[in-house]
Amino acid sequence: MIGPLHIASRDFITRWKSTHRFHERNTRRMEAGLALVLCLSIVTVAIYGDEAIARGVKLIARPIYDFFATITRLGESGWIFATCAVCLVAALALRYRGWGKRVDAMLGLFAGRAFFVLSVNAVSGLLSIAFKMFFGRARPRLLDMVGPFHFDMLSWKSSVLSFPSGHTVTAFATVTALAFMAPRLGSWLFVLAVLIAASRVITGAHYPSDVIAGAALGFATVIVMRRAFAARQIVFRSRESGIEARGAGLISTAFASVIGLGVKK
Image (cartoon, rainbow, N blue to C red; front, side, top):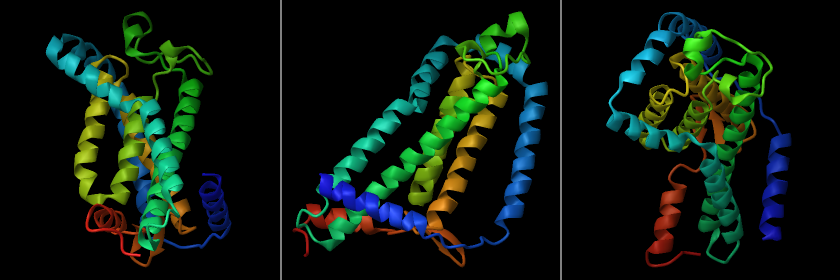
C-alpha cells in the first residue's frame, strides 16, 4: 500500500507544481454577473421571505416533515468524507496488481476523482464554518425571541451558526463535483441537492437565504477548484472549448473488461 500511495502522492505533487495558464471564454464576466445576482437574491429573500417562510413551515404536515427529516441526513459531510476516503484508498491499493495498464489508469482516475470530491468538501466545509462564525446568525428556532436578523458575530454557539447552511454547502459541492465528472447524472444529482436544501428550511434548521448562500458557496468552491485542477491536468483538463473531465468513458470500459471475459493486458 505504501508503494502505490507514494507514487500517487509524488505524481500529484509534480502535477500541482506544473501549472498551465488558460482562459475560459467569457466565463469571468459571466461569473461576476452571477455572483452579483446571487448576492441580491440572498438579500431579497432574507428581507422579504425568511420570516414568513420560517413561520409557514411550522404548519407542514408531520409525514412531510418526517420525509425531509430523513432526506436532510444525506447532507451530512461525515459519510461523504468516509466514502471518498475508502474509494481513494481502495483504488490506490488495487493499482499495479497485474491487471493491465487500462485498469491501472482507471483506478488512478477513480482515485483522483474521489480525491477531488473529498477536497471540494473539505475546502467548502472550512469556508462554511468560517462564514458561520463570522456572521453568527441566529437560527429560526430563536425567531420569536430575537427575530430573523440577530447576529452574534464570531460566536461558536450552534444556535447562532445559521448562515450559510452547512448541509446545503456539502450537498451542492458534492453534486456539482460529481456532475462535472459524470454529466449524465447531473440533473438527478441536482434534484437531490435541492431536496436536501429544502429539508433544511422545512425542518426549521435554516432560513431560505441560508440555503441559497450555502448552495452558492458549494457551487463556487467547485468552480474555482475545478479550474485549479484543470490548470494542472489533474482529473480535469483545459481545452479551447472549456474544461472537460479527463478519461471520459475510461472507468466504464475498464470496469466492463474486468467483469467480462477478462482483462486484456
